Image (cartoon, rainbow, N blue to C red):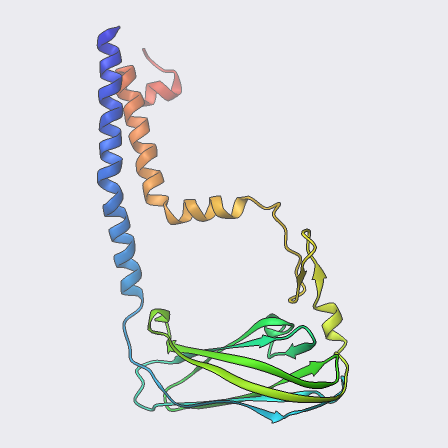
Length: 238
């Protein structure tokens, strides 16, 4: 009986050593694969501008306008990804290029510009109080696939004069109340009920380690029982 106990301890120790030894190899292979997916490239912008195309807000039918324009170098090796984040005060509403970039608080526009190309578009701002209001915009840009190379252009100050207050009708539909009493500006309701997301993400990120552990555990059971592994699980020949 004592010999069987020591055999069990030795087998489990061997399993632990195998897992600890193979884990760094799995992670190294995964990191190398991800590194090979994106080749380093150089990309820069020649010009970037955020400005008020129309700084007067005259109600829900006549908003203020924000102009965003960018030009990139023709010598770029890849596209430039540009992220413009607006800090929208509570008494204003930002109508961006999509539902995900509309509302109050921090709203971010994300777009790509090809080498030697020019990109420009206009977005809208509303206010529910008359008077002057200021919006701050911060910018980050980087070569596509290389967010670690991001560079910043901060504190673009955009001032609007509101002579007639009013939000668009879409502003009402974009706000929903969450379970904790807060409001989402993108029209979605936050919930903590779904607990499966992190677990599935863990399995996806560590599939190699989980597989190694299961195989090592199966091997350990077979060695402890001292019979072919197939018989252990099928109840076959003893």
